[in-house]
Amino acid sequence: MKKLVLFSLFLAAVVIILGAYTRLTDAGLGCPDWPGCYGNLTVPLSDEKVAAANTAFPERPVEAHKAWNEMIHRYFAGALGLCILAIAIIAVRQRHKGTPVKLPLLLLGLVTFQAALGMWTVTLNLLPVVVMGHLLGGFTVLSCLFLLYLRLRKHSSVSVQQPKSNTALPLREGAQYPSKNNKLTAMAFLGMAILVGQIALGGWTSANYAALACTDMPICEPGWQQRLDFQGAYSVPEAQNYEFGAHNYGERATMHIVHRFGAVITFIYLTVLAFMWLRSSKLSTAVKKGCVLMLGVLCVQAALGLSNVLFSLPLFIAVSHNAVAAMLLLTLIWLTWSVAPSTSSFSYSTGGHHG
Image 1 (cartoon, rainbow, N blue to C red):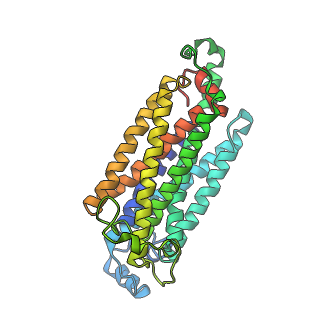
Image 2: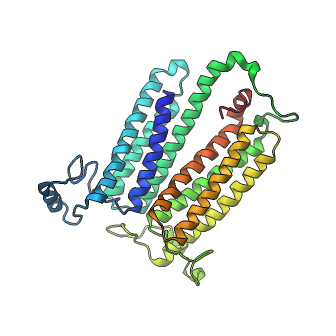
């Protein structure tokens, strides 16, 4: 089961990347129906099928490249859903062995709701709230799969290594078990909340096509203070179709500016958090290496965000910005798992290798 969860984790990351690619190539409505494409299981290619599709959806004629982007995303998402269904079934059958059951069942519910959000993304013509929810749903599924993998690895390692508890790596002299360090744990969870909030702000900015609303540095074009409109920026205007956005320029600029300020807050907080952990005598070498990794990923993410503005949202950089956000989230989840009281005692009893 652990290998299946690991494969599903990889698949979830691919689905997030494909979702970003679909959104950034304006292919979210590449297939105007759901779950098929113009009434087919694949993109219509023959002249007869294309003509029939154009007749059925005259407002959305077939654009094969966009339709394929959308359908490939759906195929991978469908495969992920089947994998999570298999995980849930295996977990229920193996519950007598101590296999986690609640988290797999939660994942099954999440991926089902995520499929519904995918459907509503199409049927509600890219309604921003749904698009942002779909993005956050993908990150949530990825995070829960990672947590499940950590729990399964802990469970299997306990079974194997429990008789060898005397082989644990010693703590540094004067160090304490992190279960006694509630301050670090609280700061880790606050960092998680800040990062998730920033991802949500990025999702809202992207869903409303506001990524290039400001192209000047460090904040926005001159006069941005007079254009700020928070109420309008975080409401949904009435529109028949939300493709390419329905907010005015001031509202989009507000979204972009808030996302920039959120990025600065996130960068500062996670950097301070990482250095505090690096200076702590209470944490293992493995956790400190994770802090260094988080700092590296954080710097890459900041560079990608700046590059999106400076180079007018190049596709590769914009997709990478989503992928690295997922990597940053997983890194912080692992660090939080490592210092949290419920898991850290195990981490230390096994030399910090099982987070």
